[in-house]
Length: 155
Image (tube, rainbow, N blue to C red; front, side):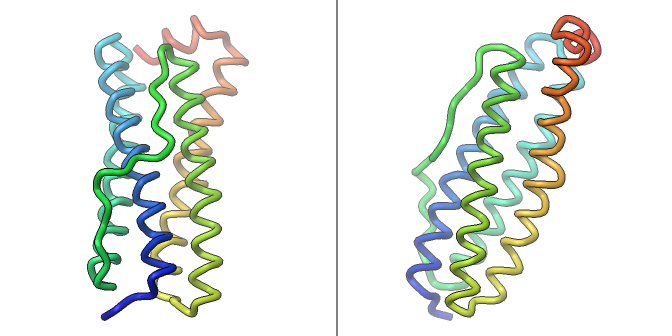
């Protein structure tokens, strides 16, 4: 089924963000693991899996619409150097993805592509209610209990 080129282009833009988020979560998870922060490693590796799932859904939809997924481009990738900068960078990516998803959902509505909109709404819910919320919570905990206590709780 031949898809709308505006939507295919927008989906590739989202894919670039999801792939960057996936790569960023992977390196951050591995850094946490190396530092012995097992709880952070497990959660962030779970986020890596979620982002991989988001990318798969976008790729599947683009292929269905006879588009060409761009597997090379990454948008927004920035590796942190410590626990706080890593959490902040992951949250920044989630905020950027959230805004982009809302824009593409609106485009889908305008172009009457309700199936793609529904797929994106699922990703949006995951981004807002799971990923961003959890990261906001962790940064709040760092401020409440201090970095040392927070880090100790993640061992």
